[in-house]
Amino acid sequence: MSDVVINVATNVVLNKMEQAALSVVTENPAITVEQLAARLSKSGRTAQRYLDSLQKKNMIRRVGAKKDGHWAVTKPDDTQGGK
Image 1 (tube, rainbow, N blue to C red):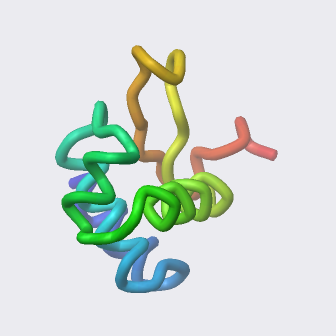
Image 2: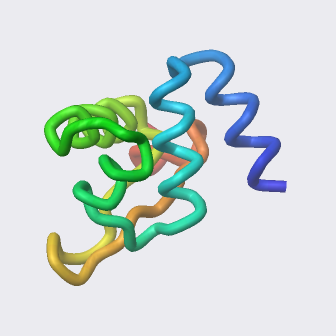
């Protein structure tokens, strides 16, 4: 069911590389920027830009600390606590 939500939302607001990054993060929520970069064959800075963009678009959020945390995929209408 979460695939449906992700696919609907990504078709509207995400480019292909952001969709790819979101897919990787969904598969492995504990992924690091370096691991994401390797999976996407991009630089670490570019992978960080994708994560930043996904966060700005409220598609993902960071849960926990930088070192011990993970990524949580959010539904667009569940973001910001109903703001």
